[in-house]
Length: 330
Image (cartoon, rainbow, N blue to C red; front, side):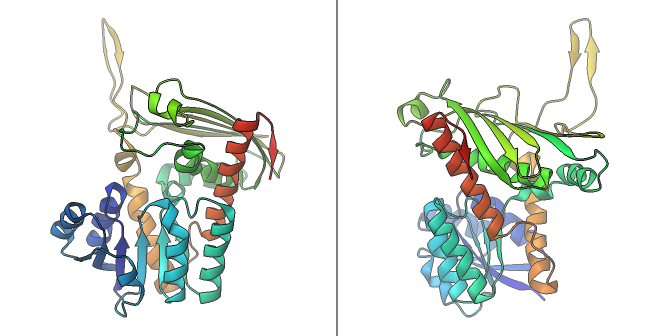
């Protein structure tokens, strides 16, 4: 079975998804909805898909089995509801919504329509993180006591990036909130967040952040720490660790080679990946494959609407915590 799929949004992340869908024998990317003509034409030239400006044209398209939403986050909930009501399976970029009311509305629509709703927390599918999760799940480190995640971007976003209060938690740290739940195997019950705009003047003006540290408490008693920065000059820094009662499991940075060069000047290690499309290329590809497996074979989704909702709840709690300078319970 070849799944006929439409893509909503053809910007940076949309183009990445378009390439993976076009390269997969499991999908036929038939139509792309993108209001920006130049952006749309770029995707059309690469994939051969038909282009429309208005995403609502895809809702009633009888040829489509599914859609992938790579549109602006504020549109996600309404789009999920519309496509669910039309009986189409949905793979949605994070975040699922910008508030819990809209997230609940989207999840309910998919459940009532009996369609699949996968939220693209693709880092769960990264082969290295998967090994870390398996080690914890199998009890090889005992009961988790500390989950430690470091996630640092290589440079600030451009001036066109929309900054605002809580944006870093909802747009960046949300991946780490999901990963913390995934690695701990438990829900987050308390959040304490600090943030600062130490580098990005535009973030400072918009009451946004470029640096955050978040402390977590899980229902199983474990604690967590998430360390985020928008500027790590040495590259895209992605590390995770779970300390347990019987040991530790850790996932370090993934480099192009394992070769280091030593001279009289010292040791030179291989460079880190440039950014997330390189570091998580395999997990993005696996995300669409798992979506297809769920549609065709009924395989479980790697992350669903409930996971999307849970991460939003933590992101909102983190923003409340940093603004009010207090611990927030979920």
